[in-house]
Image (cartoon, rainbow, N blue to C red; front, top):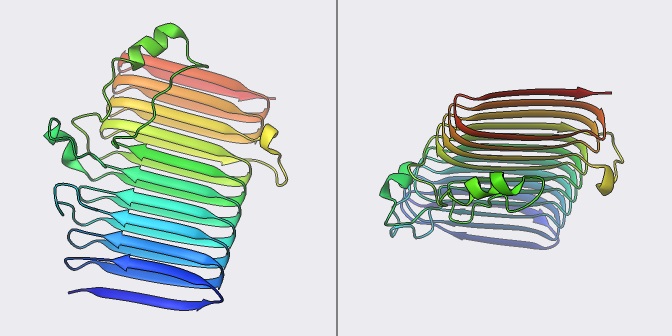
Length: 283
């Protein structure tokens, strides 16, 4: 069964849907100059796009060609209200879920999950990653990479050369890889959150709140890098000019960072197993 639903009320709309094997795509756009692009190959993929506003762009690719349609049960849901927002979801392999919701203007959200097609790492094709992003405000950026071939690793400051030497030993894509969760929630303006996870059952949670009208130079930044199994990174930022960087390599490590006020910085590094980091900063 093939089903495509396009509900359109706009002066200019670009919608592309290429589907196969029982996929469902629903695109609803109200506004001007919005673009919705959906490409799905595999089995039982589902995609929903709702855009209210002007000049929004959302692209969803699910299971495009990895191992020739060996991707199934992916889900993607994108909602954008406001103007000039961009959202991008690309999922391969199987059993992924991704949700993006943006309210405001000029927000960016990107989710990559399980885009591994490495024949040398078959165990990396576990799938079942879950990613959720919610942005309310303006000029926020949220990015999640889980198991993808393009996962970024820290390459410089604020981590020192000794810490970076350990990062160099981490292979990306990371295998085995499966069942990771990442959640990013942003309220206010000019917040930035990035999460990169490779392994099994890692969890990343980033919550950022800044006052309306916060400038780019005063925005909050949070970076999570986790490689291994069952690591947890949680950060809560409420204020301006807050930055935290968390890098965990190993298993069962846990880092919790809470920042309130202005101009705090926290650098967190764990190498090994069952390490615990707890940081609270306020003024």
